[in-house]
Image 1 (tube, rainbow, N blue to C red):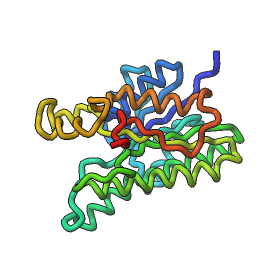
Image 2 (image 1 turned 120 degrees about the vertical axis):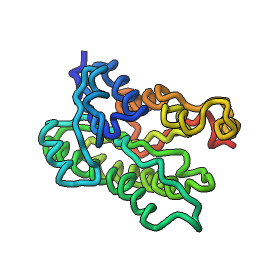
Image 3 (image 1 turned 120 degrees about the horizontal axis):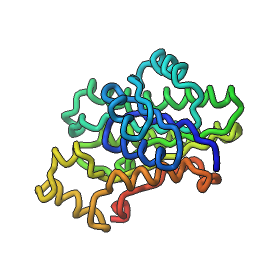
Image 4 (image 1 turned 135 degrees about the horizontal axis):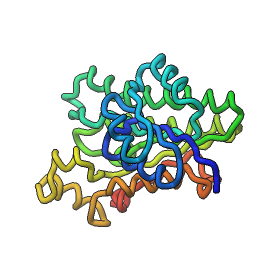
Length: 240
């Protein structure tokens, strides 16, 4: 049996982060969930470890990595989804908030973890959480979608430069995911929910387990020759 890897998952207290942690734990890996709040509680059911972490704070990231120790798999799941606005209305400060978390935070985590992987001269894996919104626009969500297009570009940038160090970098790009937060905002049967589902050929939103399975696959030996890709998990929405 292969040795357990240490898997660090940002945004670990949210619905998708918890599902990713559970999937890696099921695979036998040691899970560390990181978030601004709630990480310790979220880690308990999977026998993992929770740490408080602000991914926009470089010093805090370095201190957290010192505490966690060697990381074999980084999952950049943390992201700001709740700030929206149309092009003519979105305040510039709000766009900077989105980019600071979704792009700059993902960059910092990738850079600082990858540096340590290179120093250890051991292979590693990074999986970023992107979105099909980076390729398919929705009115009012352009700030978030622009940040995820940047995450896809960052994924390719990191993949091509880190390949020589045997570090693979990929992304998972979900469509709408049926998280508790989304269910509260647009309950099943509501006009907003039904409008989203109508765009999906498969006829349903992704479950958090669908996203987690894709992340675990891209981090696994089964994906050993895959790097620099962004894998849609969208029930075919990009086909429409």
